[in-house]
Length: 75
Image 1 (spheres, rainbow, N blue to C red):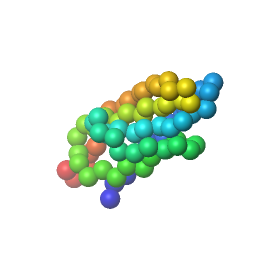
Image 2: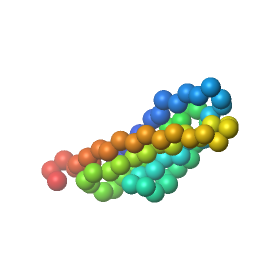
Image 3: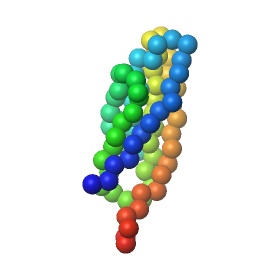
Image 4: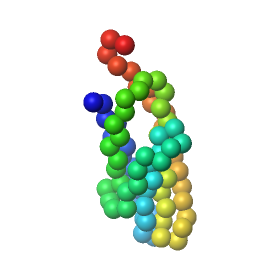
């Protein structure tokens, strides 16, 4: 089993309401309390894009993403 830890560094002048985590555009989890982290179990290989979208109490949002290449030893 392979996991990818998704760890955010979130700050805002208002309280953070939640962070949503996406894999290739599909919602995979939501965290409402710090630390805003998600552990994702991954079975495939190749390029995967992960996005974190943070929402504050006023409804403002911001997103950032990262693309990683998942490879398996010997494969």
